[in-house]
Length: 535
DNA sequence: AGGCCGGTTGGGAGC
DNA sequence: CGCTCCCAACCGGCC
Image (cartoon, rainbow, N blue to C red; front, side):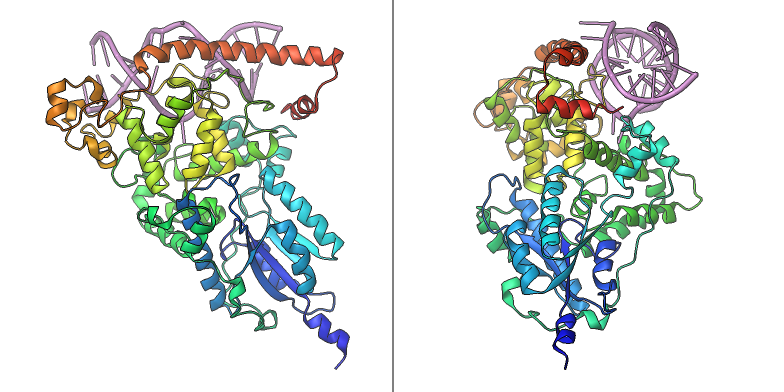
């Protein structure tokens, strides 16, 4: 046999899973098994996931999210094995492992889903360069979002839509979202081969292995309410798609932040990891709604998908989107440094039962309702504690299963009235707001067992209960349950004034810096800000 | 240029 | 309970 022919047979394609942990609607994966070599043959396929084997503090993920990832990997591996291949989990950093893989496997094609987050872009550029050096063709596809965020900006004549309504009008002028691609029921047999199918070097780590690796003690795990993986994602989706009238009537602001069972779909973790495709979700909703009367964006379910697209679009086009300084759309606010209050907020010990219950649910379960996020975010920032939204973002980044870079930063700016939302005089009361949907405080009782016996009329404000009632309930403020870190009635009006001032100085600085920069040479940071002036 | 409109989800008073 | 209006205060988009 011709040795050249033999070499060609072993030309390999790698599909690199990062997000997009699914086989349905995965156009980049499809390329990896459909494209052919220059000799017209199929590549041998190696689907990989790269796992950093070291404990790195800068990857801010709590154990719930590591578990979700591990479950998603197991599911992906299982699905791939049914198709005759497997998931090759590679231990290392992408920039370290790729050169070895390229050589070892005679790789000629690398496919992955396009990622718009800055750290991922930097990583992917680096890998593209490496690939070029090794003669590997790279193919990226947009599939994490329904729209290509760059095309949205282009459709708006190069400027970033800064309001949701504007965003809607822009996408209305664009073609419909891409139709989802069904998952393959089989792969071309020429793509498949036996190499390493049983090599445990590439196995998905067990949960214990992974958690220990990341510096956690597996015994601290709480019960799993939202198991990861594509299969779970599709199952969960279909559960909700069966409820046609619920889908048609869905209005986000009318759902409850403090019901004992989630009042919304909890599909966000699956969207974050790409276990569920946004396009697939979108077209399923269209199908279910059909010609029936239904709610509309921004409050409808489809409206929620558009919010995601909106934040991805702005996030991809705005420098320093996840920071205040150097972020051209962000109000510059002199937030306090208050480690004690931050610690109390982070651990659900502010003394405000509604706030604390939410923060405890977040830590235990990895998911809280959108309006619950509003409540605690407003409380941390402009409402009460006057602590930077970046601190809150970091806590959410660690604890949320669905921690999603664009939406996390976008919503934190929204809630702190730093961008997108500006009616800063609308403040959530940490006492009153929750009562609207849970008068008797059952939600608080569930997440703060110390308060379980508290009478209804005091459950939202235990520090006001007379000592006798506190004692009867077996919970004395300051002993079993902390005193409040701040007095809402005292601070929120003061904070509104401070916010007003921050707006004025931000505006003044913006005008000032554009005239100043004529005289003084601007720093590189300022240059970036100016370049992305968003118009 | 400047004014008007509307903004996914506030709270409270008054009817 | 549901509705309207007010609250000093905002902004982006549009005309």
